[in-house]
Length: 410
Image (cartoon, rainbow, N blue to C red; front, side, top):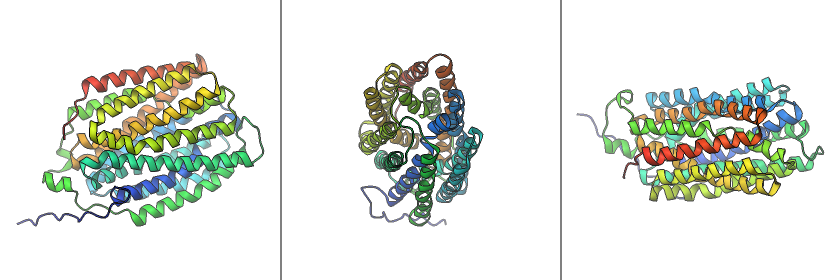
């Protein structure tokens, strides 16, 4: 006779969520401080210091965003196979941390790609297993809140990192409108520190779940590989691919701010505002998705995204860019947590790792053609053309989500 699976005693919550959610959020916060310092201004480093074209910047941004895709898919599947999430997350965060110091040596766009590939491989290894760990750690009724809080902490790290970047830009003498190599190298040096601390937090304070409540409730014993995904989940991935094809690298938003002659310090502060609105809205929007459903929340977010991209296409004043960055953060706060929670709603618990791998993989793979298309449109037609293209695909994807995807009732 097989002994019944043991159920863990619920741990004391932190900020209303499972400790695993909080400490993975803290890990993401520290990692984002590092990443915002080191990588956010890469498009300006490429254009201002290395003098490369918009097409090359699109290639760097898209390739960076897409590199992790295969690793996200593979690591998600592997985490299901071995039944472990944390170990893969630690390896992924560790690889990204090791790659970052090499940015100090980058003196060509090829070298920048090399460092970004190392960082993105680490992100690919960690992302799906981390998302599955969060989903495993919480009940369905708390998924939106948990993913929302995680995204909020991630964005809070971006705010802190960008504030530090703004201080560096202010203190180090240089061109008012362009990034200097000295300022960029100081950002890298300081950014390495929180990346190391993040890995330590993950290793010591996040714990693998032995058995989730969902697993006990479902009582499923079939191997994960033979449990099929629903047609609705596959359609969701197709619609997400359509949306992401128009969601080019945020490099182009930074270039657009520079295009209207925005001083460098203001560009950095715009990014602070973007991440601040993202952080503020993420948790309440996650909670809202628990109450009214993920599909409606994501649809509203995609509508806002389309309007923001239309705004970037039509903007020609600095104050307009400020407003657009703020609203763009609201789009992220609405969608990021809800979209991830929606994946867990649609798939069997035994295949969450694989599902998050496919979800993250689709988003990552489409990022390369999205950024290449945007770079070509920007350089050969007009900057506005890249934003019109993104807005149009976002609105098409929104219609697809509304009329094709049926949300499962709890």
